[in-house]
Image (tube, rainbow, N blue to C red):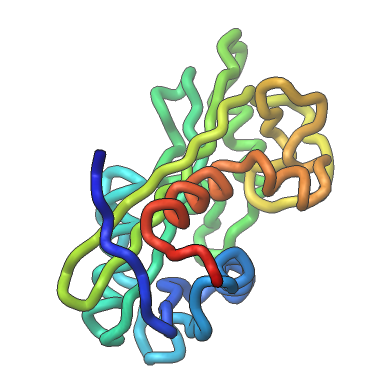
Length: 206
């Protein structure tokens, strides 16, 4: 059984400039640390995501921020993989939504995904979230969570974000876009990755 280094500090830097993501991660880990500054609080830009896997990109971002901030850092990378498209869009999930100006439009991204599927009978898909906790000395721990399902069309629901309105998790009648946030978070890929992270690297609060 792998033994992981435990987080025992007061400050955990979230390797992201996305205010919503920083807030969500801070809420999930509130019992385990006192401060959750973002990478932006240290004047750090996002490094170029050159990894070919979610885990590689999460580790790249966490290492970059930990080394430059002098504090442990946590990064995530996540996206949607589609069986009939050989795992695409995968690590390119966010880029599929970008227009020529770099603005993201996930409504268009879902249309593009449906067009790519065409008449494919296999509509299996899965969301993956990789989390990396990195220390300034270079040590890292990586955890992944996955939720399987299928893609529906037309899209259903206006909750969530990204590809949620077209993703129907296995064993459920509602898409992620139709679920209330608490219901989605209970089964999501990110929640599963966080459960592994917390069990391995964080001490239960007294």
